[in-house]
Amino acid sequence: MSPAPPLVDAVRRLLDADRPGAAGGAPRMPDDDALRDVVDRAVRATGALLGPGELREATRAVRDELYGAGPLQRWLDDPRVTDVLVNGPDEVWVELDGRLARTADRLGTAADVRALAVRLAAAGGRRLDDAAPTADARLPDGTRLHAVLPPVAGPCAVISLRVVRPRPFTLDELVAGGTVPAAAAPVLRALVAARANVLVSGATGSGKTTLLATLLSLVPADQRVVVIEESGELRPAHPHVVHLVARQANADGAGGVALSDLVREALRMRPDRLVLGECRGAEVREVLTALNTGHEGGFATVHANAAADVPARLEALGALAGWGRDALAAQAASALDAVLHLRRAHGGGRSRHLAEIGVVRRGPTGALEVAPAVVCGADGVVTPGPAWQQLATRLAEGLRADLGPAGGALGDRAGP
Image 1: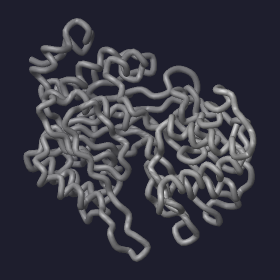
Image 2: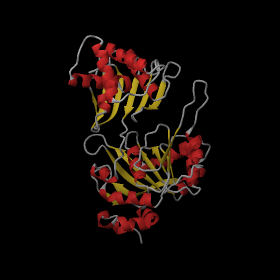
Image 3: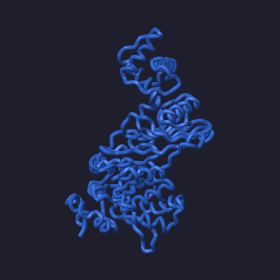
């Protein structure tokens, strides 16, 4: 339950008074004890008293209202929730355990939803108003925010929140959860060990970022990883990671830093592993060029409905960079070794899983193609595809050492 607005306002005034010059700004979030003391003072000022349990609950509610997502924060704190979607004051949806369901939450009026969207955007360092009616931001706790204001969004602001868990999953955890089949795990380890250049593909919400963070956690500790993103989501368990985050231009059109600019800057930072969180525009040119000039072991993600659709997606992005089909095919076939395609299931079973490992190459006509090397069924059964031998040859030594009997049909074909 949300705290009464007078209490929130009183706490805000006390916090501003405790931090001279902070009024109207966004002061740093106090720790639990400090905020509990302020809430207690605000309550006592009204002549009321709260017991320890009531005070603890009021403090949590005030924290959510001032620094979190208000009444939506309880969903963001639930480890089973991946997305929280607001379509209107009385229309809040959450994806819980892989299934989208409408909740009973009530957020007040359309004005209240707009105020929440604006506050969350400000917390993520983004502007959201009539002049800039859309915002994409990363909140302080890592949650990814996308918000759209009326009239672009219709009668009410629309808010989309995607939870980014602070701790990446290990590969063993992804196997245990069914995201990665056990027989395919050694292939993923070998891709990292062999410094293969890998593209992770899939639809929105299919788990691309989750899998990428896991793979980066497998990179040896003595290698420097430079990660380039639009919003800082990737948090691999690795001791040497440098994060570069793109920046939008200000209201005057100045100060913007594009992903393509950051790729060029990253090349001057001695990266052992160059990582592009999402390839969605002309930056494909810089990434493929970099991976063709000695920067091995790179990663990127791309939106695609299937592994076989990745060439068409890359061609579309290459066109934005001024590349024709032949130029893109030549660069991509030389730069990329493998595609890991994730699929998001609808209905029962595993909601997200690795569906295919493909090899990037030029086909008989010279066109770019992704040939299946490992096909992972929805039931977890793994079978080798037509390009398995090509992939096994690329990964040769690492595969022979790691597959063993657990590789099953793959282990029998793990190299000459």
